Image (cartoon, rainbow, N blue to C red; front, top):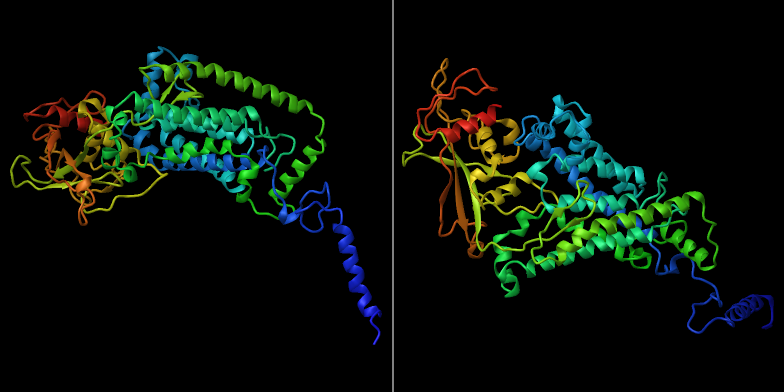
Length: 541
């Protein structure tokens, strides 16, 4: 038998070629890779120091928070600041206009920058819905595609700023300013017009990336300093004994704050770190970034164009602006009288942040109740609870988990318990609307105990109408101790310490008149009619 025939020659020749090819390979390198050759395909590893993929992740994360914020606005703005809302934004804008004594001018616009100055106020619900729906559409596009440009991101920022600046107390918390500051920086992370996910002519600006890092640094530092300078229990390391019991993180959920705080943190990670989020394979984003890195390593960068130079100048101007606006923020951080969640300019470009400088040692809940009894003062009067969608109420109901969604009325009810109703005008408006069985206001609640029954208005008499009997409204404050939760009572009223928050509304009285609501003249019969008449006025006006 011949051993040197054609059947054995081919494998031997192939083996010799493989050995020759690996002769000059570096020790430890995989077969087929010679000196100076870069890995390709699925074995490729991204280099550190570039932020192409970082930009995509950051913009999609920011778009997600925008989407949630506009979704909340679409579902709740009409009830809160709409035509028949608890605090109508039309009334607010008129008060701003009157304060500056004249037609809408620069003073009014700079005090409350909003697109609503340019729209017809006779249909404010439609205006609010239009802003929210447009924001939902744009944020959905960026979230799903990962494509964005300066025009789209500026649109999101202007739309949300227009809502925040007329949102009054409903939009008065730190996460609103934080979203606007994050969104403002996001505008300059994108190319001007291109919707490419990897616009090779406009790499992510280091100035903008450092702007995001400066933001997250201030958020963390401000949150820490406000605690050190605040409640003694933080220094004693005992605050956490109360925090999770009294604040109820699950139901409070702090809106989209925790989600939003993660967004600027993304700027601290480069493509090599975030590459695992993207699929490998030829032609994919990861592969294209690798090629850009290889070209940059070989010095094959294209010559700078005019647009590139303009963009650089804009970024330098942005850095100077942020540095200038950061001066009062830094002064506040260094001050022993530090304030938290404050804006120093109407556009909220650079702000100061902080949370939970003081800790409440007990949880107080305001419970809204109504009764159909003719005499609310009788001991046999049956009081029925209004239930909110997420605020603790019924002890048998499981606490809700809704983050990053946010129920603004439920959140404000917690703050209402810290003071009396005189400090919260909207409480009277809410009471009046519940007395009138207002469908718009009731859509903010989970349960109306008087649904399909007589409207929960107080007993009142008009000059030209019959006596109307309906449920009365009462608000009580209930103190609970979550640490004693047992069985199915998720929020028990153990050892209740109940005190009156709002007196029974209109025990007796005439609903008569108010100058701009009705041609009648008010007449009072009851001992405590004024509060009820005010509530009814707010519901009718």
